Image (cartoon, rainbow, N blue to C red; front, side):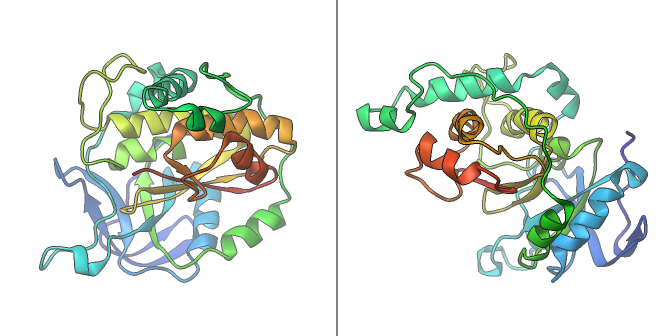
Length: 278
């Protein structure tokens, strides 16, 4: 699949989808093109996202819903900020392993985990249990359409990318002021711009393949959502996936005290997965 060219400023037609006026957005650190983004939140953003997702093979543009920072937090005269900060080369993802990234995050959490937090990982212990098997049964398309149609208004972004999982790296989306990782995935000894978006992208690529989980939403609030066409159907499979989610983000479904068990119970049959970083 070939990445496309993002529209110029103004209204746009992408594939057969007519879009309201938008502007090109650039990364905060280097001024590189990150995305084309609608000037105002679109009331039917979810349905637009769905239509543009279906056209991605034709357009080479990946849609993503975006949350902007509140106007009162912006410097005078500044436009909305969506978290586009440190761009990274998505080609690096070809050499990264979701299993390695998640195992390193699981291990890193043990450095400050007391007995109570270790209990949150039950039935798994100090060793990351590995990646969950793939789910092969899809949710009904009508159900997915109802899910996205119920999403609140949002800015709609278009990113030139080969696949949705590469969007955080290409758009420079960062959940921290400083990203950290060494050239050896899984090691945390050096600070490098864009490292966190690469780690996120490695996991998203794996979820795309195993669960049809497509990036749905990112923003300045450090929240990321995916829409999963094939969420786990059984609690057993959801438990394995929940261990991945526990290692992946600080909160899952905005629950800071989430245990692997409670995360798993919410994942069974759930099309939208929500993550947040502090």
